[in-house]
Length: 224
Image 1 (tube, rainbow, N blue to C red):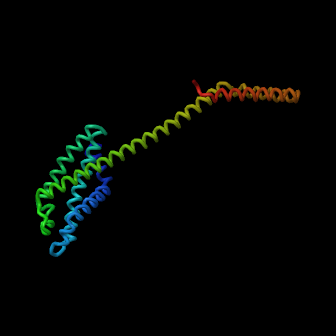
Image 2 (tube, helix red, strand yellow):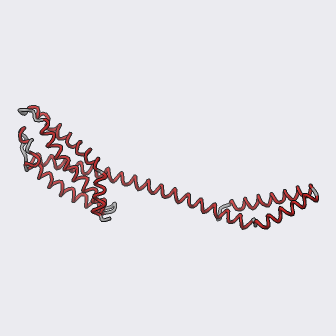
Image 3 (cartoon, helix red, strand yellow):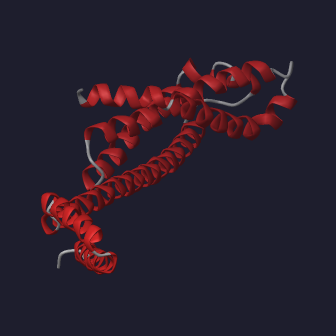
């Protein structure tokens, strides 16, 4: 999959983040002009809310899109940071200018006496840059956490594999020390010894148990 495709997939996965960011930005902007809306004729609360929702949804989409495509294109490091700064700076400046200085984002705010131009552009620009920095930090911290969790999981799997290899090596050592055919022959002789003399059979059995225990203990010592 290309970087563009990976970025688009990340953007789709983060659609709820876009909505949440847009809602937070819209609430901030709405509270900023609420006193103006109250004093305006007709109190166009709904119209201003809809216009602001569209404005900040566009900004939130651009912020998350830049982060997603930079993450898909560059690994963590200086190049990604530089790309994020440059792209956020250019894209958000252009979007803020389009929204603040054209009817695209000001057709309703003009009705309540808020003039488009420099002040609105400055407000949208610093607010979007602040949100971009915050979201960049959030995704960077989230990425580090995911990489650490992945590394811990891989280390756990490798530890289990190492333990499995150690157990297999110990079994091989034990098998080398205790030949099954020789053990069967010893058991047959032990049975014959018991038939001949119970006391001698007990002594032979104790000796066999000691030998098996010693072989097991030596097999359980990890190789140096």
